[in-house]
Image (tube, rainbow, N blue to C red; front, side, top):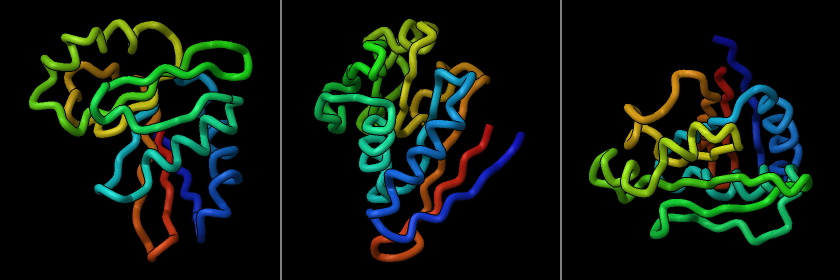
Length: 141
């Protein structure tokens, strides 16, 4: 497993960090975002989607569980937020395993709630709060 750390000193640095994560996506369709509540997972996913050419508004799928966007090549990107799930069976109920097996990019917040449904091959992005507006982003693949 390789690891890369990216310092994000302020929100102004998000596009540059998103560009670095975009490069790390190569060969990965499952990307798990870890971090405490308020660490900026959704905010970072917005920046990443922008780097991927998503024109739609990117928002947290907290209540819908999954949002679909289209990248610059009109391919689907699936954005999941499993924070409110009681168990993985709820994710199975919306067809999460089919999304995960689709080969399309799946961006997953709170992946630990559906750990048993996730393929072992995945990219893990961890956001750590280092200050009021600064973050440390760690990419593990």
